[in-house]
Every structure is written in C-alpha cells, then in structure tokens.
Length: 122
Image 1 (tube, helix red, strand yellow):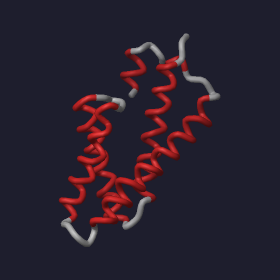
Image 2 (image 1 turned 30 degrees about the vertical axis):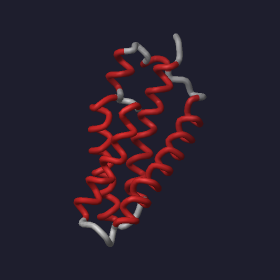
Image 3 (image 1 turned 135 degrees about the horizontal axis):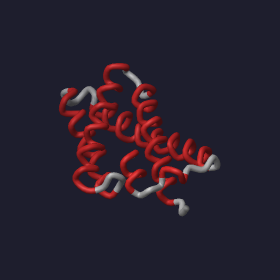
Image 4 (image 1 turned 90 degrees about the vertical axis):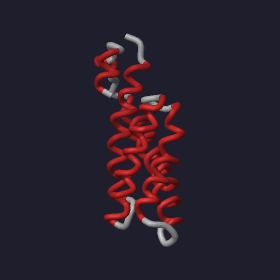
C-alpha cells in the first residue's frame, strides 16, 4: 500500500477527518467478511470436511471477488486468498473470530487509509 501511495504521489494527502470513515469502513468490512468467510463457510463445513479442504475453499471463495478489488487482477486474488487462508487458520486455532477479525481490521485500516489518500487531490 505504501508503494501505491508513493507511486501516485499521495503520501501527503492524509487528512485527520479521514479517521472516523477509515475506522467505520474497516470495522464493518472486516466484520462482514469474517462473518461470511470464516463463520459462515468454516463454521458451516467444520464437521463435514477436512480442515485443509475448508481453508482452501474459503480462500478461493474469498479471493475471487477481490479480482476487482485493490490490488486488482490475479495478484489481488492470490494475495486475498492467501490472507483468507491465514485468517481461516487463525480461526481454527483460536476457535473463534476475534484473532482473524483483529488482523483483518488492522489490514483494512491500512488499505482504506491508502485509498483515501490516493483519492484526495493536492
């Protein structure tokens, strides 16, 4: 994200009024995606399939919609899928959503901060 902000020469575009929006969108996006892809998929398939199968399926289903996200394209799918695999593993190991949601929340703060800086004109 730093490189994207640096490349677009947006590093100095941060505004303090971004913070409430960044926190709101990061909180809600992380919560919704964790409920769908960790609670819904992992929780729903937990007693029916092996752990590895569930993690890979969840990663694929999470990665595909990120084709149109940031970063976009195949790179976005791979990076998002890998993140989902790690978050799913965290959910399995902690037997809950808090660790995965916390990681996702912090990561979304970085992404939304960068996106907002890149959208503000100097």
